[in-house]
Image 1 (cartoon, rainbow, N blue to C red):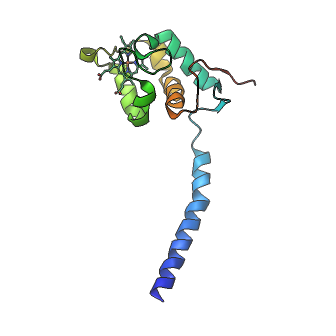
Image 2 (image 1 turned 90 degrees about the vertical axis):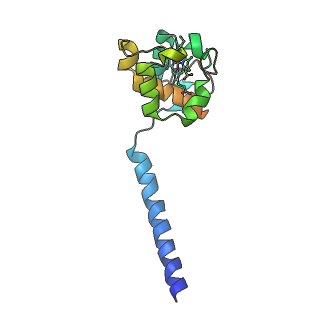
Image 3 (image 1 turned 120 degrees about the vertical axis):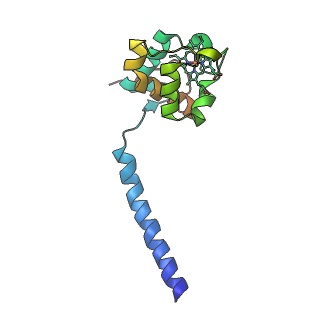
Length: 135
Ligand code: HEC
C-alpha cells in the first residue's frame, strides 16, 4: 500500500514537472536564435559586431579558440554570465586580459556579446562569422 502511494506521488510529481517545464522554457527568452549554424537574430548579430569592434580576436583568436588568451569556446562552458561580465568589465590586468569597463561599445552591448559567445561555446553557432537571419 505504501509503495503504491509513493509511486503514485512520484507519477503525479513527474507529470507536473513535465507540464511545467516547457512553460518555463517559454518564459525565459532565448539567449540567441541561430539557423544553419550562422544566421542569427539581431541581438546576436550585435554581439558579433561588438566582438569585432573590440578586437577580442587579437588575443582570443578569430574563431574564439584561443591565442595568447584562452579559448572562449571552452571558457564559456563553465564561466557564469556574471563571471564573464566581471572579467570583461574589470579585465585581469596582471594576466594580460584588458579591461573594457571604459569601452562604451562593449559595456552597452555586453549582453549581446555574451549571447554570441555563448552560442559559439554551445556549438550552436558553428562558424565565427555570422550573418543576419532573413527577416
Ligand atoms: C590584450 C589581449 C586580450 C584582449 C584584447 C582580450 N582578452 Fe580576454 N583574456 C586575455 C587573457 C590573457 C586572458 C586570461 C587571463 C587569465 O589567465 O586569467 C583573458 C581572459 C578572458 C576571459 C576569462 C576566461 C576564463 O576562462 O576565465 C574572458 C571571458 C575574456 N577574456 C573575454 C574577452 C572579451 C569578450 C574580449 C573583447 C571584448 C577580450 N577578452 C579581449 C587577453 C585578452
